[in-house]
Length: 416
Image (cartoon, rainbow, N blue to C red):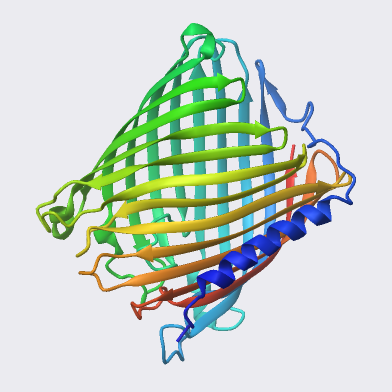
């Protein structure tokens, strides 16, 4: 069984990583982030950018081994990623438009166990954004996002679960009085479908399929050009699609107030605190989430090209299960630095503690680490390496809920 993680060690690791990254960047020659210039195919006032990426990646956990005797006995494989795509950018004083489409074919080679080649699949992502009257005091934004991925955001599900998610949204941004005041109502419709990537993991994940309507309102008031007070509110109505889950339909209210901005020449602060409430469902009356939620983040801008962010966030996610939800307490550190003219380094570490209600009898811990240098040969070609480690422990002894996962990759991207 995977050993229980120690929170004190995690915090110490996060602090150490932050110090090392900042200290290392102090000796690097800094330069501004490169731009794509006149690359792309001219389309009216905008440009269409074709792109292609290729990656070979070793993944130590692609499923449960055929010889497994416990839920942590993993199969590994070498995966080839082929990523063609297009990006469209159209600037305008009337309607700004941005769109991006990316395919990611995952070819599992069966390098260690032949059956893993059957896991080959295509992931996809599509983003569309339009902003009407972008320079005015009344802006209207349209957003459409679709993603098919095995990196779904519901941490109650096993790691190998595929998610097909679509978000369609509309918002209005009002900035009367010269921009000191922000009033931003919004609406988002979300549909998400889940499927198991592995025959032994999460065969009942389709019971998590849902449609959600989210109405939100953000109010902001500028204290200075780079600081503001914020109030974020949202009400989300989630209806599960499968008949066996419909008794778990819930409405979820989130209210947070706080401050965001630059408090010193190199220091930014984000601090929001509030309350989350999950209203009663027909399944378990009165057992929904009702507790503190919030986020606290400090950012250090060593230079234009070196940034470090350390933060804590608390949130919750509805689930169609005995507890109706799980809470997520997350500590994270993200850092990036440019060294010289060509080398860009990104790194991050995070720790999530997932608490499920007593009725579910479950607590999970999730530790993640990633690091990767990228070398920009020119404005068209970038190549790099990456390493990621994920460790999950759980009181639920099910495949995909307990594992150590190492991912090592090399990639090249051509963006014209």
